[in-house]
Each structure stands twice: as structure tokens, then as C-alpha cells.
Length: 90
Image (cartoon, rainbow, N blue to C red):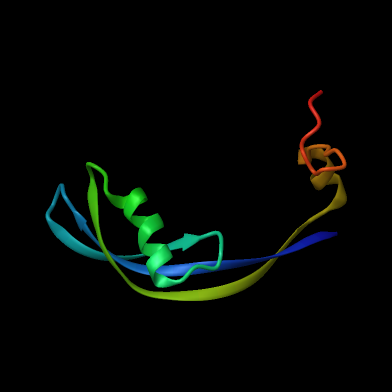
């Protein structure tokens, strides 16, 4: 079994649905550990669309999770890397 530990940030955010004009509180995950100002910068880009407007981050919570897969699954999806950890073009 190949495993990897990830630290993620769970963000509770307030958004306005522009189709219904409803204010919603939703949870979104970011694949890294970030503080509130950084989360706001990232989420503002993702949520200011034709369907909704980002308002603010209500709270963030950092979580650590371990993921794993069998060696066979890993090899089926992995990409070979060179000495500088850059993908080797086939």
C-alpha cells in the first residue's frame, strides 16, 4: 500500500446565488493549508461567476487525511520522473 498524508483546509463561506438572490453558506475544500486572507483570495476567483458572488470566509478548519492505493493502482496511473522530479516525456 502506498500512502500519502494531505493537509487540507475546509472553508465555510458565504455566497450569493445570483439566479435566486439567495445568500447561502457552503463548505469548500482547498487542497492546502491556508489562512483566512489566502482562502478569500483563492475563493473569490472561483466564486465570482455568472451564477454566484463570493461574500466572505466565515471560518477555516485545517484537517489532515491519509490516502492510499495499492501498488498496482499507483503504477497504472503514475508518471515516470527524471532526477529533477520532472515528468519524462515518452
